[in-house]
Length: 344
Ligand code: PEP
Ligand code: MN
Image (cartoon, rainbow, N blue to C red; front, side, top):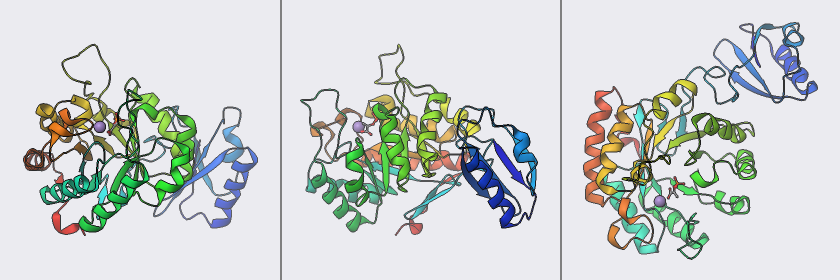
């Protein structure tokens, strides 16, 4: 339910509404506009009559949110959410690019790639240290040692870090190093993990499960947002279809559909969407043309010898070319890439 207060309603009236929300065993989420405050009452509110809130002093109107997801919906929050990250914003007109290897493999590897992607125009560095591999015998990641190398890369380049978290137990240690948690496709419905991430205040890059519908994705993101961690960016990374020519099928429709349904920023991952470096730049361009607010892309200085996802990794040169092309597409749709001088 959304409780819309009269413009200028005093604090005591807002407090009164919050007290009633708690009394009904719901949780309150406040959006303070310039003139008007809207209070979301979320939880299992089926049995709670709207009239209870309508009768409270200062309440202008009460609306039920028709979507099954609430806090993520545009109905609850009409304006695009814009999150300030280190050196750039996401969800505004500017489009940041997150780039780096699939996995952190060694100190030398991550430092070299970090420098290369920065020079080519990246705004944040990606690199996995806990890898969700299909085979338990495949490289599982360097763990905290990898995070130390990532931290050194951030120090040298100024790029904030985006790193996948795979388990609740990793959160306290990882929080000390990372700027953005990546929630991987395979964990999109790991509800315990989602709730635990919702307890943190670290922004989240939330990937669509490989067989998840858009509605399931939004419902799952709600687990994080309802915990109070509102800085969630949704990522289309391709879904499983009958098509086998590419690793996954980019659901390009998901971008404008998500932009309609939710206020959260939407990011395109052309690497896992295609699984092939030959198609990455085309899908990055398509994503931006379709309205994506950011790009996350895999880059490796030596893709042939990458420990994971080499086939879909761009060389730094190919990445630089992609950035140039994406910049032109961004401008064609009245957006722009994050300007270099805005970075640290
Ligand atoms: C990754 O980003 O390397 C990754 C494992 O992605 P996804 O969860 O989308 O498969
Ligand atoms: Mn990968």
